[in-house]
Length: 416
Image 1 (spheres, rainbow, N blue to C red):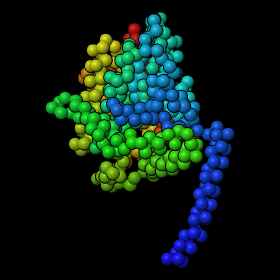
Image 2: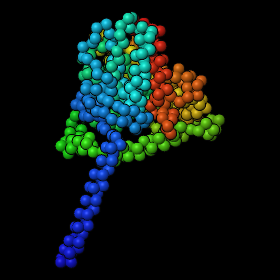
Image 3: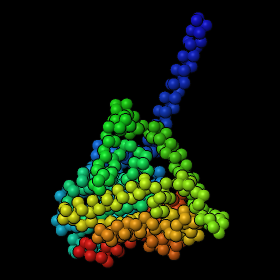
Image 4: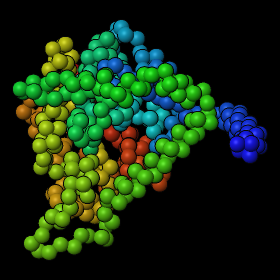
């Protein structure tokens, strides 16, 4: 015992020295990071209705993809401040969507909705009224959370038009608990041909844990410590690199056409797991889970249209594009089509067009024309730097999309 006690007494000063050294190093690093202006804030917070939302007043650099300085307004929107009362002689458009609408990778003035507003003003789409667009987009949202956003936040602003943007590669699976595999958000389910809200996330263990004192202290520490922010950014960077590698492996090289016999379809030997969940959006649903996900999504879109019209506003549905759909190299797209066993990559866009025709919903479909633009100009509309071709719209993608949406609106009678 005496020998063990002596060892402890010798070890404690060393341990104390290590701890002091770590604290001193962390303090120096903290000061250095603040001097160089480093910041990596958390832009999101818990929300009892939608699971999470943007944090009012959050501001800082966004570097996960692209680079921009982000400021969240006082109402939790990635936008400038807007009064609840609509200004006189103003046509107000409420934009609902996910990360494409949120647009963190680019400065706000380079987002498609900002550019779209300027183009609409040029063609006098508001018939002499000022055009105002309010951005309610939040990363990761599916149509379910967007419908709840409409009910919880949008109507306070009395919009004239509600524009729902659909990111087809993930919005459908985001509406399915079985596909998204996240329990901390609300979902809708079809029960007896009626949409029923499932907000059981509010009592889930993870959601309750995130509201605990320990978790709130962790968020406070992240807000106030640049060193902690560096650690978190490093973790996210590793995840992004891993995701980038998976995305590259999922896209075949142009010269690497799959070898098949005359009687074998290219995708015969590929399971759903091998194709990847995101890629299944390009195929007709082959499982009950995917069939349900599509049916819920279509019901949510229709329900949103009904609620918008009941309020005396107009509803516009816009389907965006996915990276693989608009790759400038036709050979690469065709290889992916063969791998998936499809004739084109526009199944989700065409299915939503069928819905819009059946339900008389105003629709703008972007992907086919964006594909033509990308191929004609040999330019990537998605991705940044080493991840070009994957991910969200880059500056060019936002610009072309914004101009195209404005052109379609100006040509139609939606806002007149």
